[in-house]
Length: 162
Image (cartoon, rainbow, N blue to C red):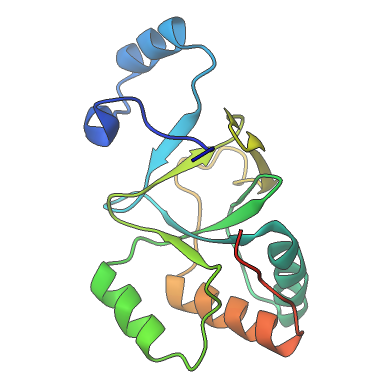
């Protein structure tokens, strides 16, 4: 599938070691920046770009505080606090309706970060982390899923599968 995927051996080699990162960039200067989600790192909720742009407008009107939002031409991802699969399962089970186009990047997942170029195009910040913030503020997954599902349902915004 087009998109950003980790090089073999996958996320087992993920690191924040500056020497290793410099070596990777020297040997693969066009490789995308990939965030391993979960653990202590943020997770993400993603949805189709058009639905996401409309949902963010609705969330802004509601006063919902969001953290960084990663965007490509086809999908936007809202960064959220790390969550467990059990927590996500309980959250989704309690909902009457959840658009099938929502995707969740949790433990064991990954997400391309700006300024990556993937098979689906360029990745950019729709809402960048605050400058100088080593650890950006991110909301709980419950708040984002509740608000996004409510905004999509209440505003009649379609979120088709992509």
